[in-house]
Image 1 (cartoon, rainbow, N blue to C red):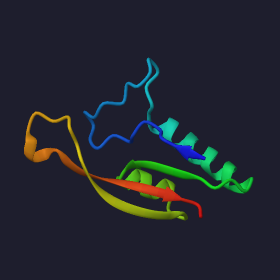
Image 2: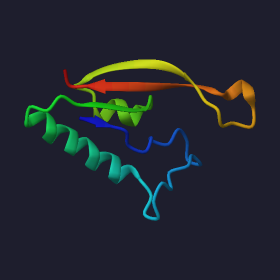
Image 3: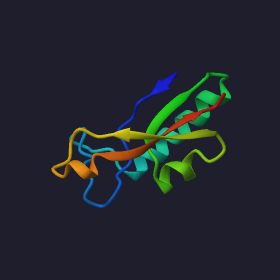
Length: 90
């Protein structure tokens, strides 16, 4: 199962309004519980997100690999880089 959820905010002004309800901290915690449930059912799971303290905390018991990424959206071209994390339970 590949989970491509809305990304955790990098800072308090980060965009998270993917839906009218948004995808807030509670939603990220709920997704982590679903990941845990799928793991318990024997599903092979992969999830990607920003490499933030929150995401590392929520998925600390799983395999995590940080990868550098280029961003296309930023008014300052020098800031068009970042880190994402790939989380797997296998």
